[in-house]
Image (cartoon, rainbow, N blue to C red; front, side):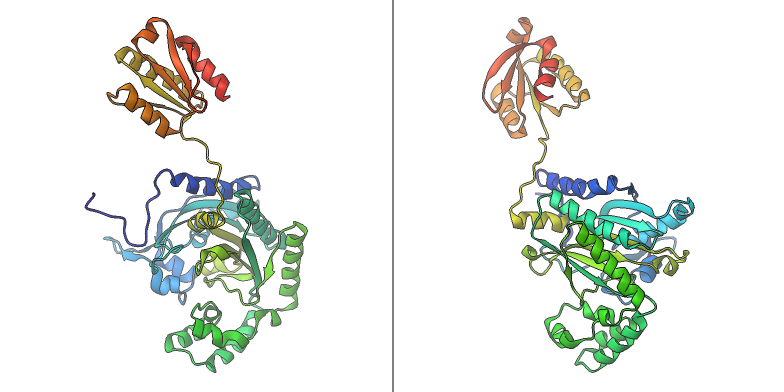
Length: 420
């Protein structure tokens, strides 16, 4: 056993389970690729200040969960705890918003890091696929992203998830609600840290998961009762567009995402089969984030879906993904001449896009056939000195058990025909 182990709160993706994660990533990305979203990749670490400004200095992410460090050159950096701030920073730096085609539609996939208490569904290193539409204020964009996420989940066979929807208002109506909420919170029996958070951003208190706090919040004022006419109309159009697309959702007037940059539309995907860590993804509109990090006014909307939690949700529902076989053909040579000839055939098959593996090492027929079985290959090609002297190889169908002799020069075409 190795001296070293994966750090606490992290995990290794290894076969065969890693194939599930790849399939989930592909399924989430597929509808984005056909909807005008281009792929973007950002560094795994950024300036601490980017997240302090964008995510919010009062959030648990910034105050407690960020992996922050100082480089030898004195730069203060942090492993990225989320994707939106990084993607927006990259889009602004590359002047994508000046190309004349707004919104800029981007999708990404990667690892993120938060120093949290490890438990099932909550890791210190986790994987997400995200999408951002930058530079346009349009209810249809908000609806599009919710619909695309719903489409991705359903393409995987996931059914028992719910979409929670709310509006957080804007700079016109939220200050009035903020004052009303702060007045209410000051009358509760809360600890000093929570009261301090209420002074900085009272909406964050609504996101507190502690039962004793939630009990006191039962009669808290609701933001929907304070929305201005513009925000009400915007939210109603989002609701109508989602409904018209046949996507079911639940209005949740207490839904508050854990990041400070959200405005207006906010939503969350939850799965009741995951226990306390029920959120599998979420997002919303963040019209002021660009200005927070030094850019121009660029109203935007986006989401991030957790790959790890989506896999757990699939397992909770008992959904078995149809994963492509990693190997379709397995070649078993018996003798040096067979090794040389079959290795050449393996290369030819791979060039044709046929997943092919080879029996490496000096194994006898019995050991090599065990490897062939473990590989999951549909066909095994076996060749020995007697076969080659007759100009043939033995082709075995691993499902039916049938075996037949095929000419050495015809084996590639035969396999291409059968696996076509």
